[in-house]
Amino acid sequence: MSNGASVISGDDSRTRDHVARSILENGPSTAAALGQRLGLTAAGIRRHLELLVSDGVLEAREPHSALVRGRGRPSKVFVMSDKGREQFEHSYDDLAVAALKFMSAQSGEHLVTSFARSRADDIERKAAVGVAGRGDKSVAIAEFLTEQGYAANIRQREMGEELCQHHCPIAHVASEFPQLCEAETEALSRLLGTHVQRLATIAHGDGVCTTFIPTNATKTKRKVRA
Image (cartoon, rainbow, N blue to C red; front, side):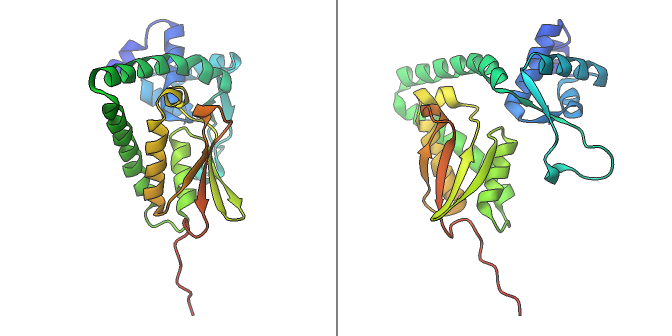
């Protein structure tokens, strides 16, 4: 058994905390994926999931149609509810904010900016794999961000598209350190090959993080076949 599994094999409340945090960090997950990730039996993980759903911390949803393969009834995916995010995110946020404040105080704002850029570079590298070869880059990016827990989609607008992120795992940290949002926006520009404009952010009190992408920036031109 892995070290992570041995840590969470204690009392039920700590185990449920680890289950919920795993979804918070990794995004929507099936019971099987959670059990494997945390070293729990099928019966054990389902018991904890049922209690977390009952408490309103998690929600059970049908999987996205694009993810359903093969025969048989698809497994439900478990996602963090708004109540769950409020309950679990703040402890992480407090530590992250404290760490960044320490970095800033000890070495200056430039170190926080460098950290934000490094984080954005990592996101860009991972997203580039899914974007490569795709005809619609914006949709590919939205799918990648959703996998990362951002619950993203694309909305068509008259002059272009809007990338909407309905959840932000780092919202409370970014509210104090806007460099994180700025670096993410720059990474999106590089991935799309065009300037994009951040119109709204959850970190600044808006309901959705919204990024405007101008027309013709997201679609790879296709050759017309005779």
